[in-house]
Image (cartoon, rainbow, N blue to C red):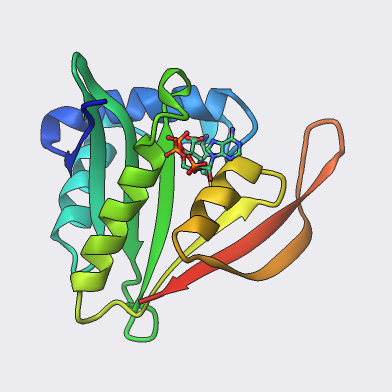
Length: 170
Ligand SMILES: CC(C)(COP(=O)(O)OP(=O)(O)OC[C@H]1O[C@@H](n2cnc3c(N)ncnc32)[C@H](O)[C@@H]1OP(=O)(O)O)[C@@H](O)C(=O)NCCC(=O)NCCS
């Protein structure tokens, strides 16, 4: 399959925002509900510009023939002297395009950029402890568990969910 991983451009702001809202609307993978996504077009354009310009950070999109944005990965780098060696990674693929290697290609792209950075020492992320697909992907690319926050999140029906902290040294 012909997937292209490339840096997001300004014109990707709207499709990445739409994809982000769709994935949040699935209600299973991220802690925010769609209405909690602070996502104006301006904010997203700013995010694309800033992450792409930061040392070790990135905003990459996965393109398929006829699909402008089938998934994306963001790495935001700490802004303080004591945090700027860590990049926080977030990845998502549209439901219709999962299981085709896009998530792996996106995370590999982000790792390559992080590895080329002189500043970054570590990529870190948090993932629901029951998100087995994401955890398998991260493990296969060298991320290791660093800890588990038990009952860190609460579903609307009162069910607690655990948060797994994972990281990959550079
Ligand atoms: C997690 C996610 C990004 C993976 O992207 P994807 O394009 O579906 O994954 P890929 O096809 O590249 O598969 C990569 C690896 O992920 C794991 N994986 C993917 N789908 C899986 C599934 N249904 N069950 C178990 N493992 C799975 C496998 O380890 C797979 O490697 P393999 O193909 O060699 O077995 C995608 O499922 C997604 O967007 N999920 C919803 C959002 C989300 O959970 N984001 C992460 C939050 S921390």
